[in-house]
Image (cartoon, rainbow, N blue to C red; front, side, top):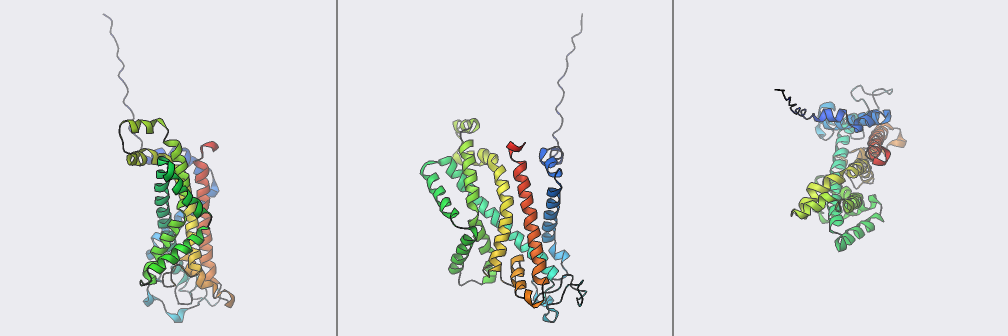
Length: 318
């Protein structure tokens, strides 16, 4: 009697870790293939780490008046003739160590930029999903509001929102409300791009078979939007968020430079630049130079990452 050999099915290999999948992904290969992108990513990481660990890196706390002395004001950098060895990048007009002020200012600028982008993204994604899925009059109303806002520069919208909120909170202390007002101003200035992009993607996705199947089994529109459509429209949103982070940081710096942002007691990069430009022509060049270089390097690095992410996630370029 002949034996019948039965080949048992091979067990599926265990699912790879996230790091393993990332290592073999096209996204990582695309990132490593560009030296400019790698440098931009390294700079961005350094800036974020410097902001997070500012209390550990900074020699002094610029927010603490007890650690700042007017007798130390306007000291040049350590490497300049006449510089004080205690201050690497010199001091400002209030005697604050400029190196410490830049680290803390970097933290403030990044926090405002990140929270502003998150707020604008939350508003824009929500309205874009509703407009694209509902259609009809709701879609028309939301898109007409977006079209009207697009006719004004983002900085004017931010100035308008800042003025309105300041008028509503006129009884509040400026130092206590400045951070939140800037976040709201920036968030309400950048939601339109998210809304228009998400609406266009939602118009395509809602006619796909998986959405029709979800409707047939009785899923609610909110569940369909959040569980099925939203994950498929997040690619362009990530690109917009990365680029808008740089724009949000510039907007915060512009508002602070114009005097409607953070007060001098809460230094951001924009506030430091505004303070420094008052002393530029009197010879204290370092007060405006080093915060400006930091701001320019941060924005350039984030913009380069956004450009790479846009190309890497574009299927037409694969």
